[in-house]
Length: 623
Image (cartoon, rainbow, N blue to C red; front, top):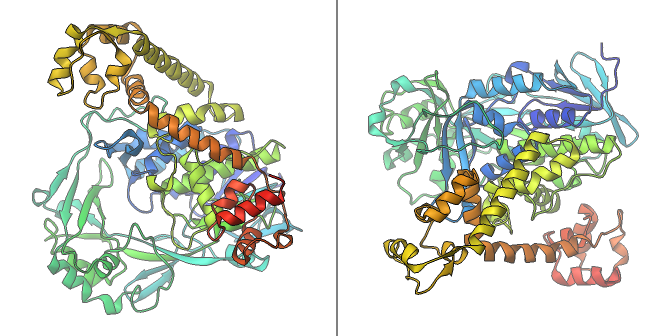
């Protein structure tokens, strides 16, 4: 059946696998996507939403690089919100609720329309090696499929165990079986593996809820979108989410099931996500808090199914039922599915290179939750990068590695490779040292030129970036060169409680005042005429405003990044023998030998490697 040798085989059809398959195929690699269920490609296993704090930036970056996640989200969104709008633009984070069924359908349609991509439904139970290289996979039907490289994106399916109260059964997701065999095969060839845990809330019947007792959470009045390309969904109407709260009574009822909770009775010993804990974990860790928020999220346009965000749990079903009925609006709740916890295998990501290729086996890549991450967005970003780098290696081209000052994706992968993780890793804006540079609004300016050179981003994307940069520069130049008289601007300054001017002043200096926004300045005929004459849209206006108001901060971060990049350029030879450097601390020697950093800069970010150890390395290398 499979007489051909594929360039890339992607194992797993979740968010990581879907982006990996699309990227590899679009880079010209003959790609095979193997998944246990073709009906569940890119399934939203947890909440029906994409984006959020820092995660929204990642989706924008995926889109700028030519990935599909942003386009799919826009075409299936039922609500859009820009979070943190009251803060500076570095913190603005887009988030969209999606129609769960249409999201998966749209993903599959886009993948089926992608050239060079084949599909096969089966369970991969083993890997084929030739010495220290991978050469293919073996499936449950006993079929061996040869490939020049393999990307494993198995999500929560590797030896997955589902827990509800005292009940435990194998599965990678509700209603789907676990994947057995891959972990065992990798362990045999020397990989280190571990266990992690995540959970999901109940799904309930929206017809049984009383939304009048909840707080409505509508979408933005003027919704934006993720993709920089035109998408079909205009979001002229949106579906609201709602918010309710737990109470002391709810907490007391939940506590009555703690003795049967797999989290507390020792049946689950693996570590769950710190920043998305179960409801029982929240009650235990924050015992003095009398209530927690619950976000009541619709699963789509035409379904009554509701996702109870904030009520992730593995407590027995009778406890879930009793406790949720005490939440305002849930008095008559009907369950579609009870919440559950899931344990699964992962492989500490320090075993990878920055390309996401494993150090132990050539041409084998890991992406997604197998690397200890949590979240659709983090998984999709890794899949995209693995697909790109697998293809580049096959084409004998230089690897594509994003630096920490170039993308949140760069921060994500560098954190994983350099620091590893012992709990599910989630991206936050605070993890990025250069978040003023890595804004959601400029992801296309940062990354599309790189992707275009790779042959991944289309000419249409590149032309849009060139036009955006050209018009932004034109607008900034206009503000720098154009003066405004006191009589023209002072009424606006008084209206916004900022000091009047006594003589003509350049518009750039006026626009930089924090009390003013460009909505105020557009009251000036000079500015509004310029905008109309040059067909400048709201995206360009926003980009220009950010440039003007944050120019000093942006320049400062660029200078800091330049200093970091000087150390990035001090390359450490592969397989460097740290045992020869006697002045290093014992801990530094052990950590450096294990992680094998590619540069002095990466070495400096390894936990346990001190500034004095870095100085020793620099001296040793003649710096």
